[in-house]
Length: 226
Image 1 (cartoon, rainbow, N blue to C red):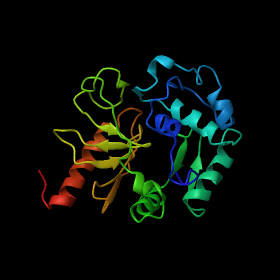
Image 2: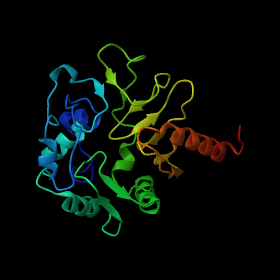
Image 3: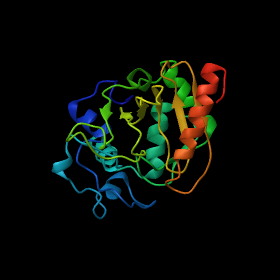
Image 4: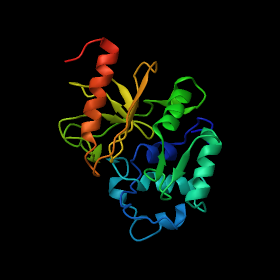
């Protein structure tokens, strides 16, 4: 968002809301660049039948990175590029040249990024919740969504690289980005508070972090616990 000056094209929006048709990203390796990762194996497979439909996969953002001229960067260069926009002193590194899953850092450094969003020092703060799309194939209109990692009874929307927790039954509108290994950061719908659940679990067991964070957030906002 910083590199784009907060101005998104239709292509940017399609890719950053995971509706571009690039849904086959699987494996990448530390020695690769952003480009060689994307073009490795079936990662760059284009599936036109899914264009315009939400499909949770990192291929959308990897392709978007190539359009942003990040393709030649290896994981060290990618970290340097990200820090040049978010803050050079932040402890952000990449274990893999993956835009949507290769970064690692500390909760303290991540909290700095969240605070910068909330205070307007990062343009992403003003974009939270924008261009949100339906994500649950069980509840969306036909041809809106194909695949989502959230439980089938949960109907969140997906904005520019993040979730909007606006499920009609249980949502409070917070903006979040749960990681598959259990890391769960959020900014409240009011953009006046933030939180992080920092834990490490087996891949795919992230929903417990979300539930824990939701309880913490509710307690903070209401002053009471269930």
